[in-house]
Amino acid sequence: MEGENTKPKILIFGGTGYLGKYMVKASVASGHKTFVYARPVTQNSRTSKVEIHKEFQGIGVTIIEGELDEHEKIVSVLKEVDVVISTVAYPQFLDQLKIVDAIKVAGNIKRFLPSEFGCEEDRVRPLPPFEACLETKRIVRRAIEAAQIPYTFVSANLCGAYFANVLLRPSESHDDVVVYGSGEAKAVFNYEEDIAKCTIKVINDPRTCNRIVIYRPQASIISQLELISLWEQKTGWNFKRVHVSEEELVKLSETLPPPEDIPISIIHSALAKGDLMNFELGEDDIEASMLYPDFKFTTIDQLLDIFLIDPPKPARTAFE
Image (cartoon, rainbow, N blue to C red; front, top):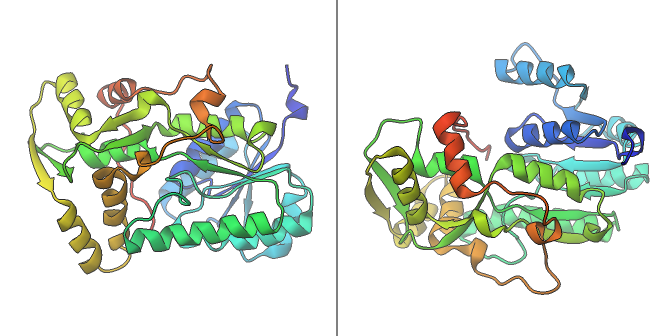
């Protein structure tokens, strides 16, 4: 067994955010000494942010408060760790170039995982608002490659609990559900805990160094209509399907003001068009469930059971 003192030390940027919280807890649970670089807590900070800081400290996480433009501070922290994971939200995607610069100076980082964890951005071309978002991710990818920093790019597809909340609205009382497009396109819904746990496995795996890892387990693939039917079977409810056509989604992406045009463009790409499944995985691709056959991804059926027993709270993704 690998001793605790030999496990890579992990620094997480964006660790107090939606996916970041899962990543921090998975890192700690796997026995890694875990550091979180986060914006300072102030009198104006939300109660939830104060609480997550306290929770992290209670499980042994070292929190370093700072901004992404504090170059010397980041370099100093980097010299204390081995692996860097970023889960910063869209408004900070290009700020990751500052992390890249600091990693180049520190010179000791064995692996950098930038804030990806969605679609495989080099293989999709969505509507302009989402495309502009993905282009910022591509800029960071190319900068990492140019700097020859050891990396892993993770394409985790959809955060399962987040999008189950969006589509099924289980915390609301309602008799209808919105179906985007025909509802027949397949998408990949991965439970956030699994995304985080699998990512912690990836960071120290030589097979994933300087590679893209795609999380596409068969049991996580489902269409909107299949998801709704399964939820009806579990709850005994019957929902009226209200379809929003692809054409309507395109129009909304053109008329909604930024950044409201981004989520609708993501929905068009992932749910209406099925972009997550619109390319085949070849022999050179690394798919997580094939790479780690003993790792049991949560099935869609199991994910919906979680919503029946202890439903994850609805969340919002930061686009501004």
